[in-house]
Image 1 (cartoon, helix red, strand yellow):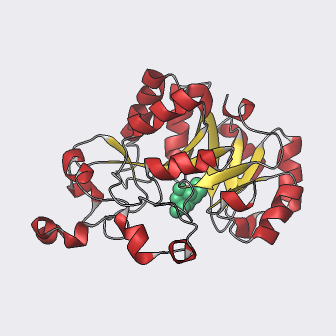
Image 2 (tube, rainbow, N blue to C red):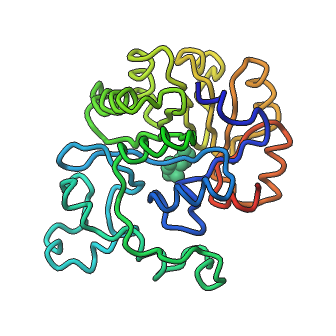
Length: 269
Ligand code: G3P
Ligand code: MG
């Protein structure tokens, strides 16, 4: 299972890849995350309008592609991912924005890698093939696709792809939409699950996590403290906190026994 392939302490997970030095959620960001020594990476799964599973964080394409510069797509503003087919999404440049906007100042500093343009939005299949080939563990966060209650079809598709690529022991599934995690557990007793939380803990946290047979809990750093890490650790549940970009805070969380999901993995390895 996933946690057999990462260290027991000081776990550094690259958030959306090596996001501070490469365009997030691209195969380039994935490769660099691995090359810089991160123990695993976190990435976001959603569906193209044509149904295929793709890797992309936002609901819309504006921030992380060149969609604004595509006259043929003007009428589709605000460019929701779900309104584009896989083929249309794959024609977009998912890397040039990083060079242009330099969101972390790393392009100006000269520490971002060269050749950032020309990246495609990856398919989940490509990511899992990389996972299988390089044995590089991945935390797949399934985005809330805003479907009606009870509609967890995306989970079935994700698990099918994990099965087809033989990557089950290298994948940690997470989601803010916990209904997806229940669905995953009902489909697979073996898949590792992490419950995501922001702002506040679910009531009766330990029993709640046990109801998913969760291997991990992923709280936002604002609700992550030493007592939580200790209590869950004693129950055999790992804690990995996000998105920890202050290195002092990161060291504090690591020292307390949790892992960190960070945009700056290269600074912690
Ligand atoms: O999985 C942790 C973190 O990625 C959750 O938030 O918005 O960065 O996907 P977000
Ligand atoms: Mg995420």
